[in-house]
Image (cartoon, rainbow, N blue to C red; front, side):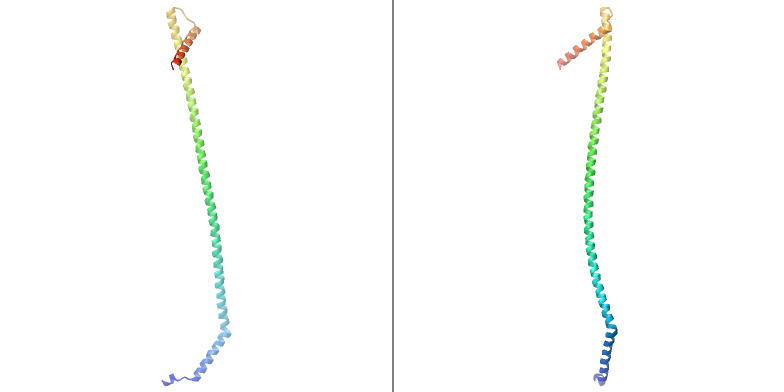
Length: 169
């Protein structure tokens, strides 16, 4: 056991020579390739960082462009919606106006038809009154009245009746 605690200078010298030989061999053959690989890896990492930064910047620029396009599309959609609402309101107003005009025409036609029916009824009543008056006058006077004088007499009576009705109102 004593031998283990005493240093052996021959083994030490040989270990130092081996270590220096290993360092020289590593320096000669492996050190440059290891350093080159590490530098290449470092450069690759730097390039990747730069590419990532560039990609991030491009992504932000694209996002900004898309946001602007989205705002433009939203504004266009709102504008088109307003135009559609305005067009719908205009068409509604136009339909209402057309409906009112048609209702007015129907009302005027109905009034004209009623007036025509009234005039026809009045003419029928007038003819019946004339024939009844002729018959009554013929019975009273015992003679025949001609159609023209009977119509003239009935017209005068109707005028007097209308005038009397107008004076009361």
